[in-house]
Image (cartoon, rainbow, N blue to C red; front, side):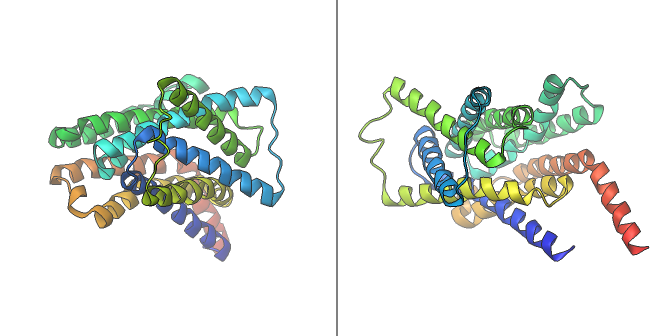
Length: 304
């Protein structure tokens, strides 16, 4: 692997590690999921604005694009609310393994939006994932609500990805991220105003919560958004997807280190988790067979 590619490969692993750490922070922060998402998105918007100011980057877009960003910003806000709620009512391990179903929700949604047929292999792999989740659910029934929230978060994440594929061809990825974060926080703000959520208690955060929120919004959101976009330009889709699928593994290992016995599950959970994660990895390989074949052909030609 050339030195430059190795650098970007290691950066991608670091970003995936950071994304895995997001779940840990969600568990450590004591406030509820809705205020957590509001603070995360608001602070992230400020950090991205600071980045634009330093880089002297403009972020004006047309009205039609703004309407699209309102929709996707709302979806990503709802996704994060469901995601953090899943972590708070269950465990990091349960939430992250269930979230791995996102690739298969995408496989179901893509044919609807891009007008293509569902492939047989996608149905088979989807059924295997359901089997893995059934094993987990059957032996970790106390976390049923967490699995439910994680499935909602997974579906919303898939919907967000598919819509992004349709909406964001015209604009710069960093600008898109800014507007989606901005409209996400606007959506949560409106909800909190209507529901009377802005109370004195809402703004009374502990020092540790502020510390974790700053890390979550700066490193795990603003920084990860910006760097991931740049890194993905230099690596093959196969490398990117396969590496991103390591997120739940990183998160589960981190959770065991940080929370210890609280994150230890019954053996059947790990059987089910192995099935889900293996199928997700396999899906990434099958979806990128063309990229693998081209890379192998290129390496063969270089040797000749």
